[in-house]
Image 1 (cartoon, rainbow, N blue to C red):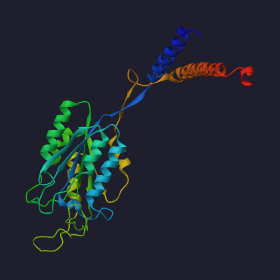
Image 2: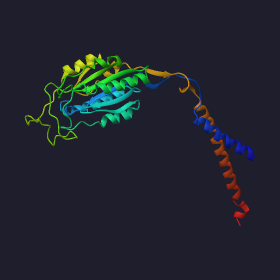
Image 3: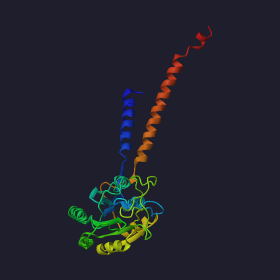
Image 4: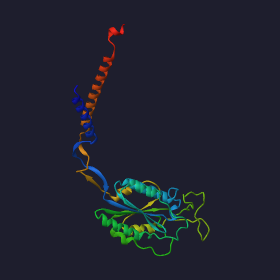
Length: 302
C-alpha cells in the first residue's frame, strides 16, 4: 500500500474525529433557555425570635431555609435576591439566576444573637426593599418582580409600623410566609441553636422568653402588598406556592438551540470504519513481519 494512501487514511481519521466532537446536525428545535420572566426578592427576618422551637418541633429559621431552597428548586431559571433584616438590614445577595449561589446564601444565613439588637419592627427592611425593587425595574422592566417575605411578624420595638402599601406599585406578586404558633416557644441561646446552653431569658422576669407569631400583622403586610399569605408549620407544599407565582419560561428556536437532526452518529460510524480499516492494515503488516522472520523449514530441521 502506498505511503500517500496510508497518510490520507490517517488524516481522514483525524478529520472525522474533529467533526464528531463538533456534534454536527441541521435544523433547530425549541429548547428551554432555562430563564424565566420573574425576579424574586426574598426578605428574611433574622431576629432572634426566628430561633423559636415551634416549626415541626425545630427552629423556625431552619424551616424557612428549607422552604426557600425548595421554592428555588421549583422555579428553575428565576432570578433570586436575598435581603435580611434584624437590627440592621443587609443585602446578602443581589439578583442572580445561579441556584447554587442562592441556596448557599440561604443555608449560611445566621440569626442575630439574643441581645444584639434593641427590638425590631416588621417594617425594618422597607426602604432597602424599595431601592432593590426600583433598580430591578430600571434594569429589567420586562420582568415581573415578586416578593417573598419570611417572618414571624413579631414587633419587639416601640413605634408604629410603617405601611408596605408604598411598595405595591413595584410588586407584581409574591407571598408572605409566616412562621411560629400562637402558643409560642422558647428560643435557644446558642448560636448553633442547640439547647445545651439553655434558652433566651426575659430580662424583666428572668424567665425563659416566649416568642409568638403575629399572624394579624403578617396578613396586614400581605394585604398592603396585595399578595398571598401562608402559615408555615411543617415542610412540604412549596411546589404549590411556586405554581401560584406563575412563572413563564423563554424558548429559543433559532441560533443556539440544539440541532433537530443530529448527524453525530453518522460520522461516528464513519470514524469506526476508518479505525477498523487502520487496525486491519496494522494487523496484516504485523502478520507479514512475523511470517517473514520465521526460519525456512529446511533450516529448522538441520
